[in-house]
Amino acid sequence: MHKRIWWIVLPTVLTVLAFQFYWLVATYRDQRKTFLSQAKDALQFTYDQSFMESMVVLQMMKTNSSQKAIDSAVTDVLEDDEITFSSTIMGADSIKDSRTTVASRESMQPFLSSILSASPELRPDTQKLTNAYKKQLAARGIDVGFKLSYVNKPAHIDSTGFYVSMPLSLAMKDNQLYVRFSGTENYLLKKMSGPMIISLVLLLIVAGCIWVLWRIIIRQKALETMRSDFISNITHELKTPVAILSTINESLLTYNGMDDKVKTERYLRLSKDELNKLQAHIEEILTLSKMENGMPLAESNKVLLPELLNIVQQRFNHLPGVTITTRLDAEEVTIHTHQESLLTVLNSLVDNAIKYADKTEKRVALRVKQQEGNYLFSVEDNGIGINKEHLPFIFDKFYRVPQGNLHDVKGYGLGLSHVKELVSKLGGSIKVSSTPGSGSLFTFSIPGA
Image (cartoon, rainbow, N blue to C red; front, side, top):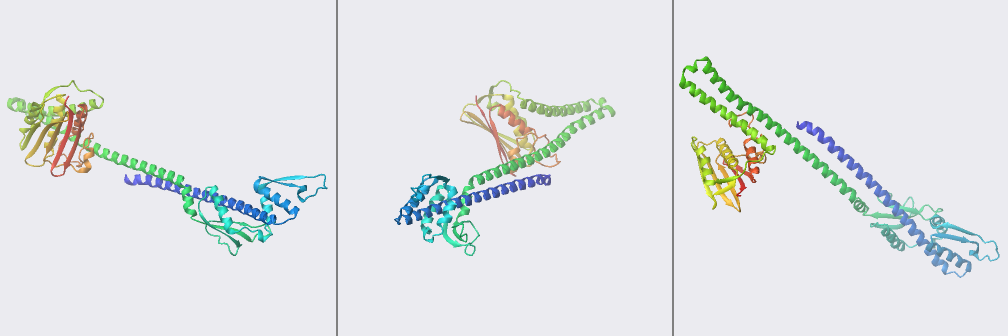
């Protein structure tokens, strides 16, 4: 069964991991592409703006009016989204039919760069470009380190890592403005924090689902084992009285047992005892079934605790090697509850304690004390105890501590389940603690009124 489970779990986990890996890699590539695109746009904008500013400064140093007109036109480029070329820009006043041409700033940037780059003295200073570029990156939400420089392509460009470059002009493509970035991986990982968190959450959800599924499967396997033990035990328990009754009937009918009145009476009493045991088991199963279907208890009544403890003690003290001790620590010895149910709980716990005691002298201590308006009952024995891994399931229906096909202790695994149901009906709760080899302690509390 475990192998079948792993054949389901492993492909599922590997598929989820592969999908998450593919998704994160694709997201990383998209983020890298977006980063480089934004960085290059910012570099182009910074260079064009700085170049034109440098040209404006040089043109202002000239006195020619036509040059001043050019200066004015270029300055407009820095301030407006459109560039206007007019026939009056060169002072041609004699031309009557003047014409105006309008172009967008973006479409003119390559044109301006190509023309203005022909003057090396107009090349912007790298420090000035660095400061301006840093502002443009910040405006786009990019916070990474970088180094900006002028290089010759391809001899002086390192093409590894994260970088962007642009030619200074169409005529001088080998002259490049080059920017190499540092710390870009951390920046991209921060940008991917959302997808990474989502991926982690999905992985945790899948892992949690697999863990829950695994627990359910293990639990189902345990239930199968318990059902197998239950069927084996109930078959044994039912076959025993049937076999005894069959033998008795055969003795009475075949071997003239009816002629011996003493023997007949002894056999009939033995038959009655076996029938009573069988009926008790059947009633226990039926009562548990009715309680699970919501059957209410009878009306509560006043119960004298000393009398109740005495009934339990007298029932078991006559058994060989069994000693039942009782102790009552309560100011109020009368409790308002359902007597038959409480008596059934105590009898079942004491009966279990005796059954699972492998010592010659079997001691069971039954104590009752009053605590904050409730009554706390405890049943402690010196039996074989219960291993820790079985304690969480000890009150489950049909559960018995696994012993294979052994029948050292009779029962169907319904006793403690029945006890828990009754305690719940009485408005209380029950718990158990145990040390293997030393015994067990069952404690339950119920309201006093």
